[in-house]
Image 1 (tube, one colour):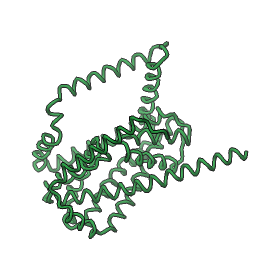
Image 2: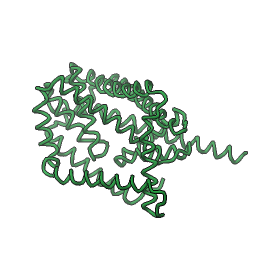
Image 3: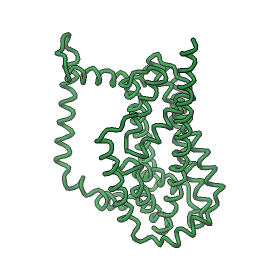
Image 4: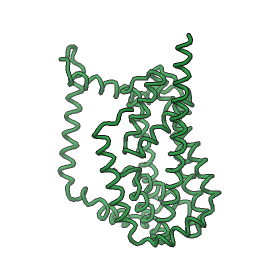
Length: 336
């Protein structure tokens, strides 16, 4: 895979931003005490958490296949799982690269057009956003008085850019919507000029076709059950970690839901794998539930760190398996 200069720059900026966020959010953490706590952690719960995360990734690959099947493409569950894990591995280096990588992987293995598969990946992400929204609403309904002031203060403290420049953000969003509608109108013209604009329109058409796959699902019950199942497993893989760490071993179920919501928000920040932001978001919400910030930060390090190590290991193994299978196919082709 060729690495472009812009990808290298993205990596450097991402690492720098990650380091800055870690520095700003961990200032009150006693690292000697944190290291001691990590060494004394009950690692049996970590292995259980990693096992649950593997199940969630398998379920996500299964749901992805349901979307791909609507376009007449039928990769095996194993192939889709390998592509998914390689994508996660890529995102460790450069944020958001994984979405494209998993699509280019299926292009290599099953000749699935990248724009179509990328459309299904966007659908996959929109479903995650939908589920996260439902969880956030549920959390606020159940603990509104407890969390109302927290979320107001959190947004003002952690995301001052939004409160200061929201008119500019709104104008940019409206401009993007107008441009998108113009492209859609242009796409319906019987004759279009060749060149970059035509290619862009064709790409967007294929992208939208991929996003429409949710309406063509042949097994909607399996699709929605797998969607719910993914998030149930996400909750469990976070919650079981709490049993292995003294300050969090009596964490309530509602606190676990709050950790899932805030941790997910931390993961979508523009830093490498959400590192630093994830810890700050999780530790901040746990303070509301009576857990000291430093203890919450250590919990977040362990819960995320174990998943990062697992993804790196499984991602590299997936990459090796895929390359081995490709070489086998090349040998068979040469023989025939």
